[in-house]
Image 1 (cartoon, rainbow, N blue to C red):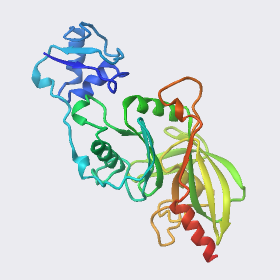
Image 2 (image 1 turned 45 degrees about the vertical axis):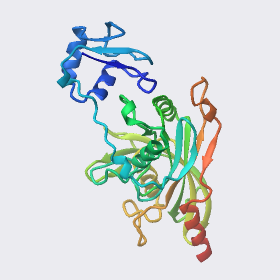
Image 3 (image 1 turned 90 degrees about the horizontal axis):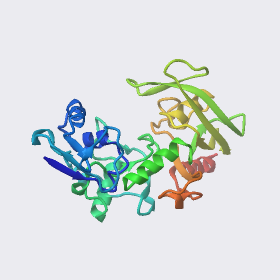
Image 4 (image 1 turned 45 degrees about the horizontal axis):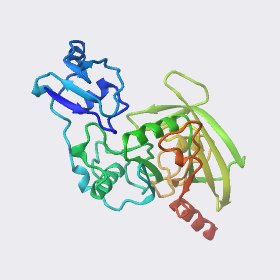
Amino acid sequence: MKYVVITKNDAGQRVDKFLLKTFETLPKSLMFKEIRKKNIKVNKKRCAPDQILTEGDLIELYLKDEVLQKRSVHYDFLSAPKNLNIVYEDENILLMNKPQGMLCHPDKSEYVNTLLSSMKRYLYEKGEYKPEDENSFSPALVNRIDRNTCGIVIGTKNAEALRILADKIKKREVQKFYLTIVCGTPKKASDTLTAYLIKDEKRNMVTLLDTKTDGAKRIETRYKLLDSAGGYSLLEIELLTGRTHQIRAQMAKIGHPLLGDGKYGKTHGRYRQELCSYKLRFTFGDGENALSYLSGREFSLSDNPVSNKFAEIKNEA
C-alpha cells in the first residue's frame, strides 16, 4: 500500500489524471478497475476518476509496488544555458525574452538547450523548484513562439498560475503584440485579416484558405503600419488567434512576406524572419484570482532586434 498527500501544486486535478502523471508504471485500465473495486480511495472514501483533488487530500492505493513506481525525476535541465533574460518576475510567473534560434520546448533534435530547461535551472538554483518535492508539477511555459522568433514568453512557477493563465489566454484576456519587418508597404495602414489555416505536419508548413474546409482552423490577425523605408515596412501585429506560423503565412498571403523568412517569403540572403513578440498586456475580466494583480499591466521590450534592424534600413535608405 502507498499513499500520497495532495500538495498545493497537485490540487485542482482530476484523480485519474493525477495518478497517471504521478505513477509512470500504472496502466490506465488497471487504475480504472482498482478505483471501481475501491482499492484506490481519497480520504478513506470511495472516489471517482473525475473527482477534483484539493490540497491536503489523502490518496491511498492498495496495489502492488511494481505498478506504483513514481514518475522519474530528471535533472537534465542543469546542463541548460544559464543566461536567462528576465523581463519581469514575481512569486507566480516569469516573463522571459527568448533569443532567436532557441526552442521553447524540447523536440527530437534538441532536448536541453531550450527556454523551458533554462527556466527550470534558474528556479532550481534559486531554490524555488525542488523536483523531489513535486508529485506531478514542474515549471511550465504558457505560450510559445517559433524557434526563429524572439521575444516574450510567459513561464509559470506553480500549478495555479498555469491554470489561470491558460484559461485567460483561451479567453483572449492576454493580448500579444509583435513587431515585424515586411517586404513592401501594405495598401491599408491598418487591417484585420482572417483566413482558414491547415497545417502540414510532415513539412512543418501551413496553407491558408479563404473558405472553411475540413480540418481548417480560423485565424485572425490585426496589423498596424508604423513606418516604411527602403522598400520595407515596420508593422505592429496583434495576434487575435494563436496558430502555427500564423503571422508569417498571413502576411505572405497578402503579398508582404516577412523579411528573412525563407519558408513563406523571400530570404534576401537570410533564413531567420524579422519577428519579435515584443509586448504583452493582461486584460483580465471579472472575478478575483491569484493573478488579479496583473490585470491592466503591460510589459514590452523597448530594445529589440526588429526595431534595431529597421533603424539600420532607414539609415541606409
